[in-house]
Image (cartoon, rainbow, N blue to C red; front, side):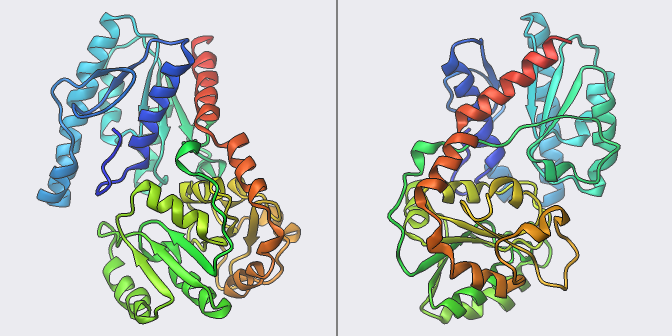
Length: 370
């Protein structure tokens, strides 16, 4: 930690930022159990376990999953032995591999465990998370309310939103005839809707991201929906941007589009964009209504009639009345009504690293008071 640019992992970055934030408040003795090349203000314990970045490139997906399982099992076993010996009060684990469930269940312990679930809760994870949440002294945290929708059998403990390192994302001037999307390039991200929107508005579209090779069908999606449009001078693809470069593109764009095609549990890119003062226009799916204030920090657009994956609670309240791509285009016509200061202030108030640290501190206090 932090993750490398080539193998960017938000969960790893947030874990490191949380550890450093807990050290900074000065109320805790913090130990970070992580790979041996991690950089942290906390005490680092690695048990000579190295990073798995290179292993992902050299191993098959099945072998890589087995490697992760082996390393996580070793880390967990040694960590709990040390935590018990040193009388550590609480252990916070980020993105548990469900293969750890049986190990956690059969390991005697008096120390409470808090698990943050960063990835989507898919059907193949349901049984493991139900079992994990039902274990004594085990507590599950989601990263948005949308993430837990429909999973009434999992005993969730709290929701804690991610925080943004505000200082890394300065407010930009905006104003350029440029709009932006960012993230892994896959069909679920809906970048083809952003391309269609830019074609209607005449803006240059910056696509910041790379093809997600881990998802089936992604290569064909890129070849059919994205690559042919890269011959258009106004469709610009940028891969492997550094954080300062990414922030510069956010800050110079007049809007950031988030035309997601699925119920995404979180979208850090939306917060990063708003931190840079750039309004977000996103479909009414997943976490979008939890992060974007409609008509204040951007606009929430209902997907077209072909989809029934919607947040039905606020359909009649949306400022933009058209749906799908037409709604994105309509919202672009109103984007000058959003102030860059309002976008920045929203993130500073609700989604800073400090806010995230305080929220987790409250979780720890609640658990330890039981």
